[in-house]
Length: 149
Image (cartoon, rainbow, N blue to C red; front, side, top):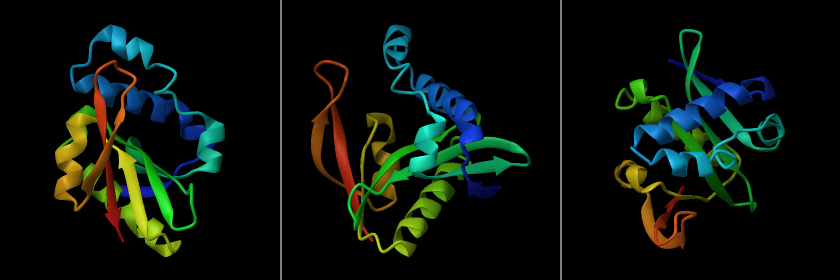
């Protein structure tokens, strides 16, 4: 597996990965439809964020994006892996790359709003829950997590 910077040309592939990964967790098709816009990765976004993709051979199988919203606090906006590659170390490698990238840019804290299905993954990587935020699904909350670098 290799990791390289994402380019605007990757947008359609990253949208596919995002949607397939989200669907893997058994969300209702109507909810996935409602999230369609939210789960779309645009070329313009990739130009503004810090994003990298994981490749197995020539196939992009996962990606992350960081948003440097503050000088020393970056938001891990996305970290998605194709379902057939979940559990093979791709997500962990992408997260390590994201954290190393943030450190190189003098970031002190990385934070995120976790999908409930990914919370344990982030806890095992050293993140801690610092709050919660209402989800776009009524009555559901997303854990807000952070990691000091």
